[in-house]
Amino acid sequence: MYKISHFLWLRLSGLLPGELMPDQSSWLFSPHQHMPLMAHRRACMIINRVRLFAFLFAVLTPLWIVVDILTLPDTLWPQLMALRLLASAAFTGLVCYKRQAGMLNAYRAMATLFAIPTVFYVISHLLLTRYSLQGLSAAISAGYAFLPFVLLAGFAIFPLTLLESAAFATPVLVAYGLAGLEHWVSGSWPAFSAEYWLLILITGVSTLASISQLVLMMALVGQAIRDPLTGCYSRRSGEEILALQFEQSVRTGTPLSLAFIDLDHFKQINDRYGHEAGDQVLKSLVKAISARLRRGDILTRWGGEEFLLILPNTDCQQSLQALARLYQQGLGTRPDGNPQTASTGTAERINDDCNNWQDLVARADSRMYQAKSSGRDTINCHASAHARPACAICCNYNQSICSTEKAPEQRAESVALG
Ligand SMILES: Nc1nc2c(ncn2[C@@H]2O[C@H](COP(=O)(O)OP(=O)(O)OP(=O)(O)O)[C@@H](O)[C@H]2O)c(=O)[nH]1
Image 1: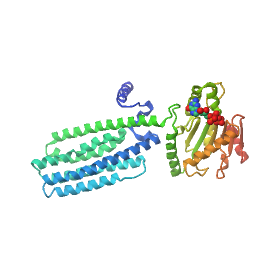
Image 2: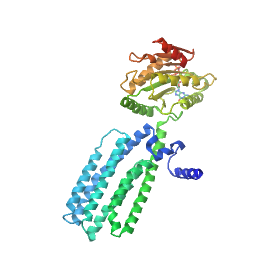
Image 3: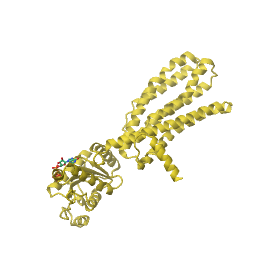
Image 4: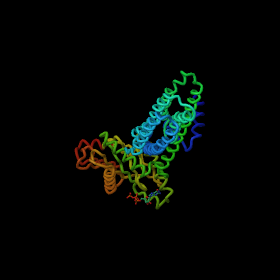
């Protein structure tokens, strides 16, 4: 059974554009495990497309009023006209929708976009069934029944997971099913069943199109956010991630630590062994660090041989522990066989009392420079005046010495780390 489903999955995922990493297949089913950067970009895209869709509907919906006036009874078209104008106003409101990009806001925007035509469809259906229209009027009024088809086909322009597509399509399918109940009662159920089946087929095709868009987006985001040499996050995406993490840390009151890591004497490698050897050292450093990171920690290449490690939900002491572990297990090897060392400066949002992520990076950066000038191969998390004493630790791994500026009990702690 597993083999069959695996084979099927490979065949199906091969049909989708872009490359799909095996560990990303669950991303197509539910948004649960999407990384924050992906979720942010997807939310931006969904909100933009909702506006586009709403603009189109805001313009097209009132245009049909002319046809209604010319073909429908005088008692019916004014009601439909009022309905159309209301729907158009609601769509215009959506075009002006300006909220911060987040998946919750994206869902709200999409739900509103699909709710407007669904309500329009149900009310227009109730109005039209009160009249027994004939000839041209009947033909024109039949057009109203196609609205759910247009709506479900519209899913194709959004990058959605399977679960999301199902959640948005279900109310439309239910509304259409309820509106068609009387066809069953009046005996014209075969025609209605065929229509309903067509609706389900369109939903299936749109869902596949949405998932394909999601795959394409994942591939593009994946390429855009990675540093091509080392495979870790690029500086641009690092800044985006950091802005999101900082915002979340402020909102939830949780700590956020940064470690600014700069390789020591890296220029010598390039000068003595060539750029190729230098590149190799960078790659092995990223490999070494990535293998030991906690899920949720993010490594970004900030500059040539400078890396920024983002540690969400991690306080000063925990970040020092994590870094001590990285240093102890090694940061890779230089071409001459010696271990590669690095100078690191750390900062933490609450302890350092930083109001924005740029300040936090600047704090970690300046501590990294202090670490360089104090002999390299060092983690420097010297605290600011606001910091708790536990953070006033500076470890020099070359000399296996750790010193504290504050309480003696922290010395014991830092020696244990070193
Ligand atoms: N091979 C390689 N070298 C790079 C890359 N990016 C930057 N560099 C080199 O990294 C070197 C950085 O040199 P410096 O800033 O003097 O730093 P350092 O030699 O590590 O000295 P300290 O930081 O003071 O220990 C420069 O020679 C850059 O050309 C890269 O992608 N590949």
